[in-house]
Length: 235
Image (tube, rainbow, N blue to C red; front, side):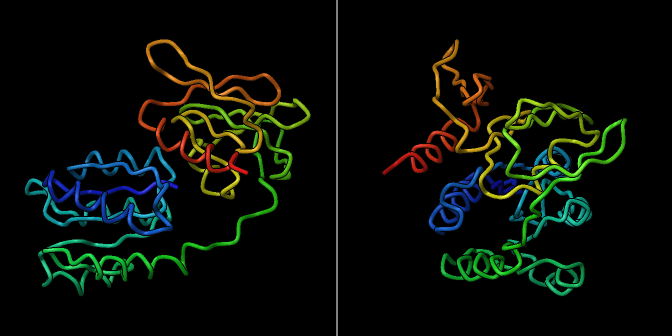
């Protein structure tokens, strides 16, 4: 899962990352940080973000500018701000919780706990893949990996069949269960389809799948991917 922390103060940003990792649900999360509204909106448009921890004062910009993008993406938001007089407005627009600064660790854990009941959503047993030939229902169990960029993705099935889908990869990622792992901005793989992880050029990593296909692992996600796969392979 991906969590976005929107905070312009670097020490506060790092502390939020540490506190987030202390919660068992988010120990292996992919944490992305942004320090302004523009970058936060870019991440929300390109990643399937599950949760945003949002400061409201960002280099003079209003953090409420992030909320509309989060709402459009179906992402939950916990506001972390010293501007407690704005809490009522924040709740009016649908945030999960409002944690006042300076952040109390126990209070943040409570807020993260409140996210969980809403976060456990039923995932579909099938994906509806829309291509130039029309709509096709594809069982999630048949999906091996997904690759793509911009507005089109390729869904590769266990059978080797390849379907083109005319939506961004982040849209499909939001529909997939935890059996799938985003390893790169352009690649999602089925965890149990990974045969091995190879060393790539310049210290990069490459995943080899059971069908022989190879997909790159982004530098930002290497630690998360290795940690997740090692845990899955442990006896």
